[in-house]
Length: 404
Image 1: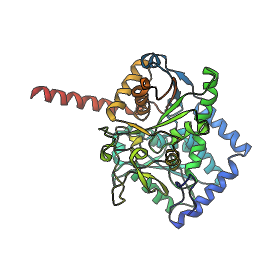
Image 2: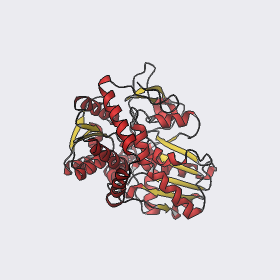
Image 3: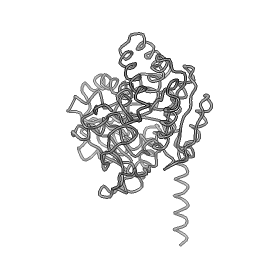
């Protein structure tokens, strides 16, 4: 086990059989991350395949209604509909340079699985994705997209049948097939060097924002707001600004159906807000757990935020006070989903809706300042059926109440 990478957080808490694979990955990343040939090939994929750079869009109607300048970093316009492709292209290319023939991945909302399937198909990898059975029901169109591109999707029936359990199954696969397989982790979680690698590939988001906001406003934003499950889109936009302490950074977690900050059980996926230190999927981080150290099941209207932990670097930044963790409820996220759709003609992913909701809620308090950037991490196509179902259930409930 290595020492922690982020203050007291991070490390490598894995079976001995995986240590050579982690060492191999770290050595390969250090070898190629500054290699001109590797970077030129990655730049080609990012521009011509993924469609970077993404716009920084001034949301004029949202800004007018809420009284502050609000910009949206349009990661929803990346090929596939989310920021996830930034990381999968980088890791898949690294796996290619390492001589691996097979990719495996976990996915929650299906966006990382889809992005992995895209990279695998394009670069000629065999690919399998592990997905919780609950998430497969919620995101069956993303399952079809993965299968359409030749990826095998494995349903995980154990535990809470969500992202945490999908990661566990992917780890089991990797242990068995470590020689020819690269485990393409989708967020800034897991053992070192994964949180660092994913953060670096996603940091293209924040690097672009730095240049774009200076061009548009002549200064950095007062605040940057991003949703946070594992935390890849949050770290992607935050990391280039960490040293710029005048910029406030707000990771927004899922509060679930009820928002009661004093009751841990009501904060269904808010590891940064109420989590406790522990080991999850190979790293020391903040986790939702009971008094016996057992991992609590997470719950959120958004499958991508339905995770019982958070990346160790985010845990560290919260610990030193550099970021301000916060959360919103399912209902607030749904309200933001409708609000952005109606005001700007942009349908956000339910994950991203949490970030929008926090800005809507806090805009008039002064906490965010006058100039805010929201990382719009994904588009809402994948969530339309879920939102429609929730709306129909709400109507049925109202009708039943009216009949009483």
